[in-house]
Amino acid sequence: MVAADIIRKTNGEELAVSGMLERLTAMLHHADAFISLPGGFGILEEIFIMASLAQLHIHEKPISLLNVNKFYNGLLSFLDHAQKNYYIPPSIRKIFISASNPHELIDQLQAFNYEPDPLTSKID
Image (cartoon, rainbow, N blue to C red; front, top):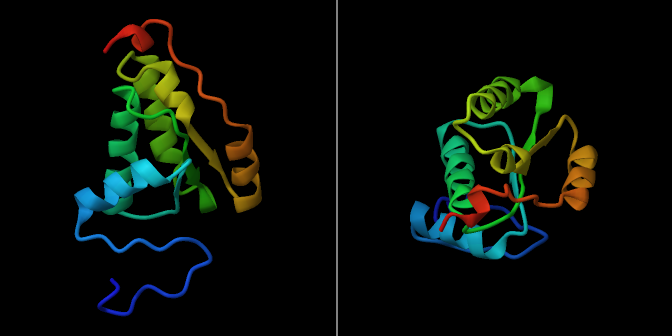
């Protein structure tokens, strides 16, 4: 994206990476939280990789979804269904937060507190 001049000036730190694996590694090590805007397969891949890493106790960071025009409602319903049927531990479902506007999402991120599951937190 840098070579194609797609990336514009940002307010924060800018990291140029060589590929998706390096991008995910940088996200994991540099981010305090993950914020997902509406998107396609790339965003979904990042969301679920970070959720899988949380389930493996590699991080305890929130995954936030900016749910513009209810874009993520179907995904949130799926996560609720999967957790209800014991495919996703409650602690992993709780790291997913969503809001329809950026201000509310930031408020939720600031209030976020990871709560490990008593059973899965003992699994290494």
